[in-house]
Length: 144
Image 1: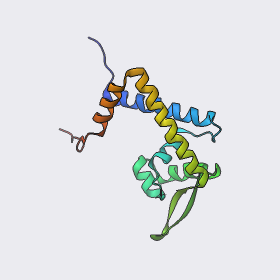
Image 2: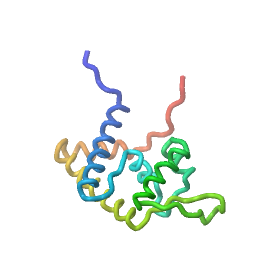
Image 3: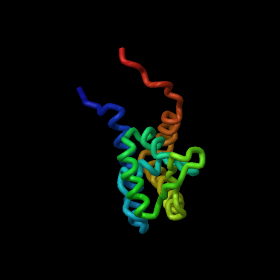
Image 4: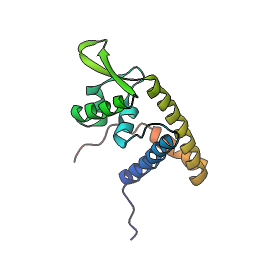
């Protein structure tokens, strides 16, 4: 009997392929060196900014961990923390101009990585993969 990795492992491996390619290409292009944690914040940050508590919820980590990562990104000049216009007590993480440029570069790199993947495994497979991932999977099943 041949062992097959669980689908979740295959999805994670694919995610890491894209993330490793993205982070290494950003660094090679002269952008500040980013970590996986930085990448997660960028992936969950809305264009108009996002509250730290919302980032923590989306990523599934503590607010303290998000604060630490946001602080690192602020030191790199990629984000800033500003008052939330909807709540005096809340803070919002927003991209700086340098952060917006980084995101634009990241989007271009991701398109290049998708094209490279299509060259490697075929455009039809990439299109099928995209359709499967874009499909409505419904809510996760509950325990039996």
